[in-house]
Amino acid sequence: MAETVKVYSRPKTLIDKPWHFCPGCHHGIAHRLCAEVVEEMGLQEMTVGVGSVGCGVFSYEYFNFDGIGPSHGRAPAVATGVKRVLPDRLVFTYQGDGDLAAIGTTEMVHAAVRGEKITIVFINNTVYGMTGGQMAPTTLMGQVTTTSPLGREAKQAGYPIRVCEMLATMEGAAYVSRVALFNPAQVVKAKKSIRKAFETQMQGVGFSLVEILSACPTNWGLSPLEAAKYVENNLVPVFPLGEFKVPEGVK
Amino acid sequence: MAKVSFLEERCKGCGLCIAFCPKDCLELAESLNSQGYHPATLTDEGKCISCAICARMCPDVVIEVVREARR
Image 1 (cartoon, each protein chain N blue to C red):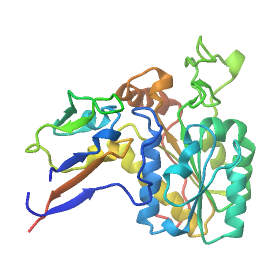
Image 2: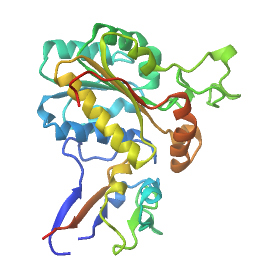
Image 3: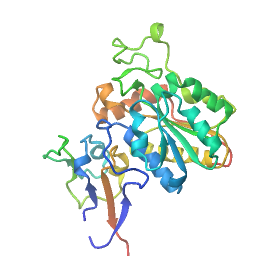
Image 4: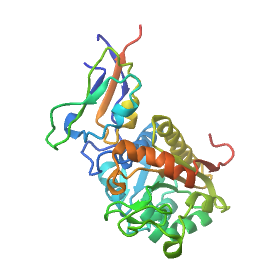
């Protein structure tokens, strides 16, 4: 080929280093989408990423912009502080389901209730990934994990929590959506949704949350491709995709 | 320069790029990288349309895609 044009290359908002994620883990795609959106919005110098505890714990090692590592589940509280002191910054948290929907439920709910102008990127893979695949609040009924070896039973462990549906009822939440990453079309939609959430924040409209249904091939005991299919066939019926709340004027 | 280039040392051989390639022009190499994975490679550049679906599905950001400049 003579002259070439770049179609895709690594965004500058990602530090050039290998990731600790398992093969086929959707965390990598989610990290990349956040970084791409920050780059496209030209906000690399104006972004503060707030990490979490779990597989997303090293986000500050990978994102090439400012980052904070808060204690377990407290990312929305830390992000609230950062955003109130530096209101012109893009402040987003990157949290898994163990961090956000279990120990961090209070912080997440009250950040939404207060209408804090922050964004939460919520990775829902239905298990505690880093600690070995234990049952999480989002684990599906009947799903086998290391702490529900016979499958999740309602009598013992209740039902999966639907974060988007819950937050969509709150007046303080401006943009709430659920996306997935199981095929290229979904990845494109997920990126658009993250963009909308960040725009919601930067236009000063209010609180935004994007839930990303993700595969955890290692803890589900599936190949990367089977895990992507599992998201499509098993997670999506329980956690329907779509935008639950969209503010006017944000495209 | 090939249309699709891989940072083979970083590839974990998950195969998502191969599964979603619309032209079936990728496969896992016979060789191993230093992590012990079979990295993905481009097998038939003639079939490749530089759509970058492989790069958009790659969880490890190992793929770069270029296309010929249009005149």
